[in-house]
Image 1 (cartoon, protein in one colour):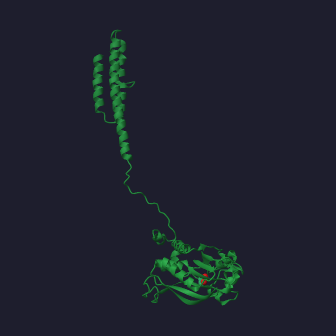
Image 2 (image 1 turned 120 degrees about the vertical axis):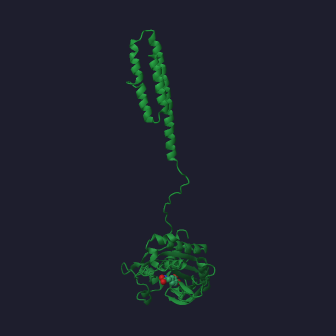
Length: 344
Ligand code: DAH
């Protein structure tokens, strides 16, 4: 019996040495140590042994069991280690892999240009004033020296809500609102950005809704040369220090005298090209000295103070600055268009 046990040990250890998988190891455990395994099989014959032999054979049997168990244990640990290492190898993160880009939004070109314009004037000591987009006829027209039936109202076909209320056609009503809020104090130095509305058919250069920035300065001894110097400063900060301006006489009911301002063509620097229709100049805004009647309606004494005002279209400035040929690009929400301004 002892010989059979030794044989069993040799056979088991031999097979265990060659075992190649966790599954095979489990099978061997059952084969040798299981309830119906080889060792149990042999030990079943113990009953036939004499009282002296039994402990001796029992000892050998335990030793054989111990030896087989030890090897199984050893193999078990080895398999586990291998498996863990394999998993770690598979799960390794390659930190050199480039990250996935998350699409991010960017400031809309119109807001960007409006902010730039605001920054220039804030740098010149202006503050920002805002007014309602739904405006009364009084502020939009009358207080700006455009009485009812004044022919100049035709210049701005309007969206009326009632006879007395309309979508503002320009940001100029904020001039009057600011004057009233300032209650005769000087100086007044504001810019007023905002949306305006006109009954226009949309095309490459017109939109029924667009953005303006108004400027208003009131104080003692404000002169047209102050207006001109301010606008030159603005234009050079927006378009570069080589930019020049020229003022052409014009008409606005709320300013006297009035002027239209041109900037040297951003494309040809004044030589003449298609963009400026060979003139070398591009029109960018309207301006003038605040009309005495407007000062009066705003609560200021035109004998005491003077002022200048100007108004510009943000879209127009943006079109010129970026060389865009159609205003509708600004409103179409086409990411291919908008994305171009992301890093500018
Ligand atoms: N409100 C005028 C428009 O929408 C622009 C304008 C012209 C504003 C002259 C002014 C100004 O303040 O002085 O066409």
